[in-house]
Image (cartoon, rainbow, N blue to C red):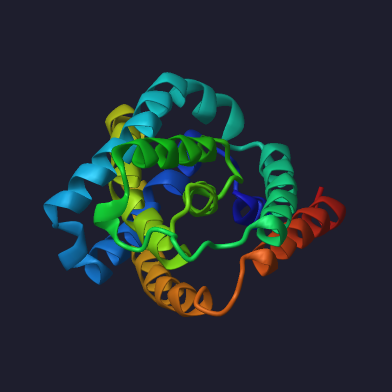
Length: 228
């Protein structure tokens, strides 16, 4: 959304759909990287349970989000700023326990529901879906690498559902020329996500997410000052 503002692209209904649907490229990257893990029955059950809260809230708030929140730079920037502050404070206070859950099979269904509730916060544009689920998982006592991978996998049903819902409601209004940008966005999203996921998994082995919190704050302040 911020990139669209920088490029002076008008926030039409198609542009809002574009912002949602191109994330399917990133989801395909997750599927490619985690193919074997994704099709384990125990993993599927936990992902489904975690997905349900977001599905309910997403359906209930679809019109509100697309009509009022998507396209609002102010909402995105406030979410970036406050999210960055929360992320920094959380990392400074959080200490991983030796008993932290490491295996997916040890994640309880109750924990999966709570992680799904944290993910639901990302209905607000500018809230990082992955950061919200990762913070939720860390609070529940999961190991950092475990919740990061679970967060990646949880994106698969979540973004597939979001994209399918938007295509169902909006695809009929797309012009024939609209499909080419969608395809390009999908391919670029896939390639960037392949690199980003591999890099992040290496990064978290030795680093906290404080750097991401600082990044969010800096981007919000600079964008507000220089653009808005």
